Structures are given as structure tokens and as C-alpha cells.
Length: 264
Image (cartoon, rainbow, N blue to C red; front, side, top):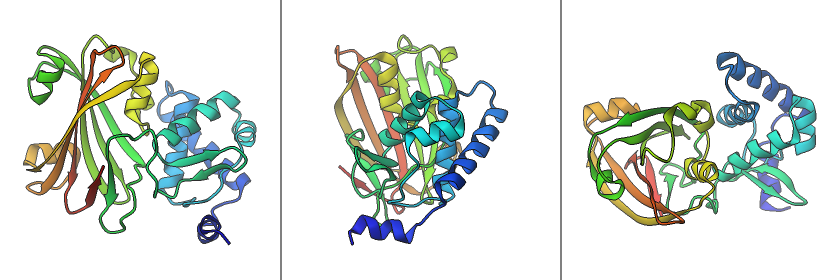
């Protein structure tokens, strides 16, 4: 018996019909709360809530794409797009001949190419299952100004959590790349933000630098990210450029140093 089969046995999860019923109900709630939300985003959020509630576990096989499309009354393209975003975030694994399984969180997704966090208590890769997003226009200056230039910037601020761990993230982008009014917040929740933005721009990013330091979170910043104040945290700063050499983003991520292990 293989290790993956053992994991599946430990986490039998609901049957395919039961899981589809749960997903359908949670999609309905998502779209009732946000009528502008796309079916793709609602399906992605429904899956995230299923993962968060541990209704499926590592190694569990998900229903086939065709079954999901039929049972959830969405197109096959919607299912494939939503699953692709979950795969980019390292939450599922899709293999020809083996279908789609919940990732065991022990291998780094090829889409996560500069660093990852492990949960200190379990030494397993952090699985992000909940994200709160806000988008702002700011003219503040900071470490991002050196990379992006001074002036107005688009700021995507996220409160991220999973496996009992909370993180804060701020991504600054040049204002000419995205118009705030054109971005639907629900489309940014539960996605690998870099790959999502790359897809919108039709360009791939290239990492320029990553810097790591330790900081003590001040009260205001801790409250902003719903993190513990006056505690030591990792501060990870990553700068990227687009394939044509233009500055893409400057991102800063904060994580409590006693909650996670940082791995490159």
C-alpha cells in the first residue's frame, strides 16, 4: 500500500455526490452575498471553505471535472479554471490518469518560486485557506519606492490565514498596470496573486531580489493584519519585474516567527 493510499484512508472525506451537494450549497451562499461574483470565484471559495472545514484531507480524490461541471451546473471551463487557481496555490494536485487530489502540503508548488512557510508545530507547508483583501490607491513612500518609483501606487493588502497561522501581506504595483475599479475583490481571494496578475497582464514575472529580516510588529500594523502586537515576525520583501523589464511589484509579507519556519 502506498503512502498516498494510506493518507486517503485516514481522510476518507465525503462521497462525490455529498461533496458536490456541499459545494453547490456554498456556491449559492457566495453568490447571494456577492451578486457580482463569478461562478469560477464562487466555486474556488466553496472549495476553500471545504478545505478549511477539513471535509476533505490530504490525498483525498476530488470528483472528476466533468462530474463537477454537471452536478454544479457550470461549464467545464469554469471548473478547470477554478481548479487551476487552486493548483497554483498548492492546495490540489492534478495528474493525468490520477485525477485531482487534495495536496499533501509536503511539496512546493512550481508556481511558488521564491519561498514558502512551514507551520512550526507540524513542520508541514502552510496551507492558505482564507484571505481578506482590500485594494487602495496610496501616495505614501517606503522601501517600495526605490523599485517602483515615487508617486501613486496601487496597494493590495491581504490578511491571510490557514492551519491556525495568520500572515499579513502588502503588494505595491505601478498605477499604470491596473485600474482599481476594474478589479473584483472576490477574484483575488484564495488565489496565487502573482500568477493571477500575470494572467491578467499576459506576461510572466521575474524575481529580482528577496530580503528577509526580523521586526517587532507595532500595534497599528498588528491590528491591520489581525496579528499579535509587539511580537517578533519575519518580514519578507520580494521585488519582481515583468518579462519586458518594467517594475512589476514590491511585496512585503509578515509572519510570526514562533508560528512558522521560513524556507527557500
